[in-house]
Length: 231
Image (cartoon, rainbow, N blue to C red; front, top):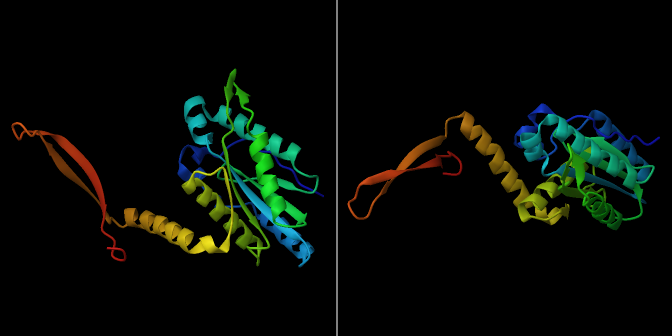
């Protein structure tokens, strides 16, 4: 049976950038995805969409967690109503949703599903007597191009989501030729997190002078990264 799970709450860390990319999928999502891949064999295609609610963080900061939860719950209801009976809508801990699309004829159906989600999210949601837009961004992947495992499919969808974010697109479909550049960017982001912990980031101040009398008007703060690997 299909599982459809619209979320009733948002994670408390959603006021930070932790909502950006799905890194901790529920175990049942991976289990169901593996089952779908096994059932598909080589004849059918499995699709996976990662849907990020782009304005969830600013809504939480502006209107509070209750409004953010209501916003996410409304998106969950719309996703459930728009998908097929066999599809699964699963909340992600980072604040978004995963949509598992089993038993597809081809990869084009995944792109159609992404376009449909963008349409159903276009209508604003009413939160606390205010109309708030549901700004979604979608990363899509299919077993045709991200074969192997449920983890590989989820990583591919997350990469597509990150690519869509960087390019300013509403959605992106994973393609193997995008991997080298994407991997480099993700690796640098991970290295930057370690650099902060290891004290490789140095704060320096650059003075600002008045041309007329050479007096100091202020200073500009700069963060310099001295990486042992990147220089």
